[in-house]
Length: 374
Image (cartoon, helix red, strand yellow):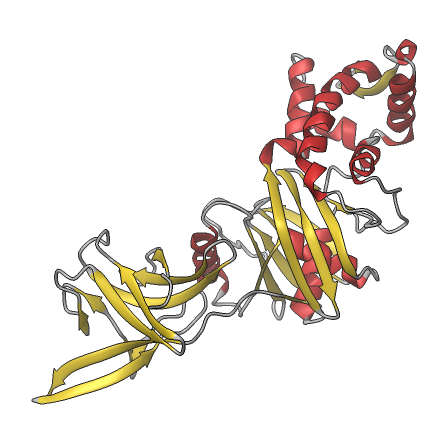
């Protein structure tokens, strides 16, 4: 039975979805699959919303390439795809309360295209941070035990928290038990209240009249939290909720091609090549390919540029000239360490078109944003 393997590099999990059922695993150190890839499965890589997006993309490519060509996306796009599969369309705020933090933004689902703008990433507003606050309030109790108690609290947890919120007299009522110790509802509210205040502040700019937020993530089922989010949005909770595994289910939709991430495509770039070969002047415009792991080639071998044995010697030049259909791009390479580099083109959600220069096979490329045309 085939499935879809979703590598989430924000949460550092690998989720194998087969017949709609997710199996969640922690990714081992070193970004290894360790037998997680099943024959014939499709791959989706969810890239981080912040940090070294392109570096993670190249690392994931090295791991996944032997098994197949993955779809690259991010958690918010995947959650929006899950919403689209559930019949939600148009523009709406999306709020993903994952273990590792809050992901939020404006999503637009139009036919099979998905676009997410105005992104917010708050690592301190995740389920793990809230569990940590409760652990600090319960000396001697372990994080995993607190996590299990809160996740399995069920109806009693929901009722006691709501009662304690409405009437302080219920603050001492046990809401859950952790390793035999009763945890009063008031203590949990004391931990939840500052979290809710930070959540309101983070989401305030995403308020859109008449646009019901789509909520997802591990934390979204926690009692009262949905109310906090909808207090910010000004809308009543709707019947649709993609659930805690929304990113994985949405990634399956992306892998199937039902939805695609809308992203700008860079103009084709070419590297002018002038060299003497067999006593003759050779001129050519070498196309620079786009995509992780893709680098320009000369025939059957990689094209290299640099101060060493490169096809395009840089010498002491601090500038590389590239040709595009709408003009010339000039890149400042003065800070580039001496060496010989392969050259490719990448697309970053934050930086746009970026040149990737790799010193050797398996090395992490140096990424240089393209300057404006001249």
